[in-house]
Length: 288
Image (cartoon, rainbow, N blue to C red; front, side, top):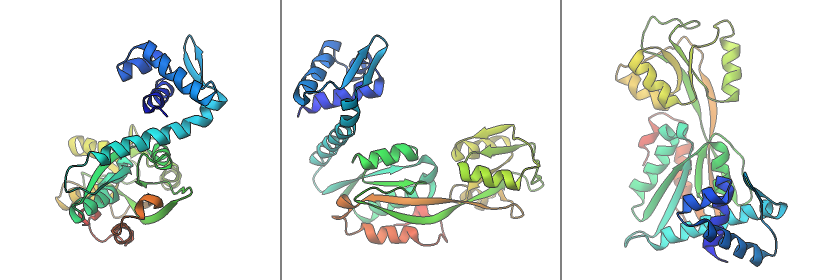
């Protein structure tokens, strides 16, 4: 099957129209149309409904999309591995939630890069749903995520729960009603726990959905926020942040999920996953 036609089909779906797909692929619209027709003729089914406003999937196109993503993902992986320079035997593609890079994401990366010089490593960031899709479609081999859903040929390795701790730039900042408090959205479970613990505190004036942005904000402007210990710990040790030990500590589950078919050839994966699963006593990003 023509890889270019598959890639064109996926691009049309992602962009929503043949015109935008042509722009992204840097080809003419007639080329996009011809590739799509070739693919539909090969399958004997229309894959897209064309409208003035764009293109939508037919029932056959919806069923075929998953396989098209898998095939194009495998093609990209095959091209990457085939082009590896001398001395590199294979590649590990890691998908990581941006919130988990400071901790298990970087720890896994360091464990592979520093412990296995024969491996090439590619890192992609995304949220939980996209990471799950990438793993299912073979675009990544391993994900570090808050979700814990495993499909066939996948294994979930639970990691130590992430501790969300109240940090402040001032020792005298109030716990319940700090006017400089920054709310960090760490997900539904955190929001519920936070609401129960601080139901009298009112609504924070400033909020972020990124721990890193929140950290940079309070470091530059002052204030307090609930941040992952793995991220904020170094700033506490350097004296730039103070841990409010009188405030409640919340937790969030973390997981390492792997494609077992790929990991079957990695004799190093099991020991590294076991080390990452150990209770955290130091900065996990330093694990080798």
